[in-house]
Length: 391
Image (cartoon, rainbow, N blue to C red; front, side, top):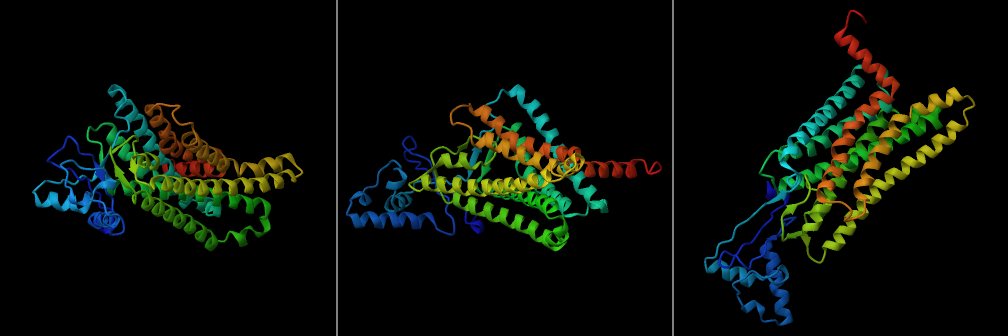
């Protein structure tokens, strides 16, 4: 499977002199082997006219000084090389052990509530024909993305919380990063589309059925999922194209992009880090800007409504969506825009759970309580299920 994905990490260890060796990870992407890379380094040094290719040291040299001559000589002399293909997730391992069962129970209950709450919303929308509208179609897609994002992140965190073996393979780490990026960006894109839906419903009510037809809604949802998948694949390939050297410990409870970038080395690391930051910031702030622009027009349209009751009723259709946007981007800003070095690793770990666990936990609560139409539909569904005679 690793060969099919093009992820073939290597850690070369010289058994003859382990006291001087350093750990190197060579994730090779798109079928480029490490032997070919070493051979290219040897050729470039021979052009310069250096003599280091003829010298076979007993210690493993730094990455930019390792040549194919050393590897071939070591292989011919019978030295042993081992391949390590995993990272170590530090996560909650530094927390007091007596607190971990409490954290485990708390996050497990929040995880289960997130799954059940979103499944309840999806089931209610499916059963209630009055909710078969574009707004609730987008809400159903949002619930699916919430469930998949939570499943991609939280179970691994819960298992590692009570486990002493916290290693994760390169392929599993890349897969987790891909799915978390995919569902996270899909979630942001869906929030943007829901803002557009509210804009059309309030500012262009007469054209709503034309602009938001079932076919157009399906296309918008498909574009959100496709866009999230493209972003996830692009960022994952960029990150795992890097060379990871030194420590293989990730100071996080998941394969977090910035934690992995800290383990990368090489001249291209700074450039890749900047490219990743620009890509993420452009996509997320672009969504936030379009949502903000939609609500500028929405507020302008609401202020033109003469009656206070009409303004309140119109704005109430946007409250749940606007609350989710504030919570989603608010917690993300607290995590990613906080000053560096201002918090310990333990506090950073707890803060990260606000976005990965707490935000998905709040989402079904906000939609089921702040959306009166959905709240009434859930109550009707419960009465029909548990009290069929009274209905």
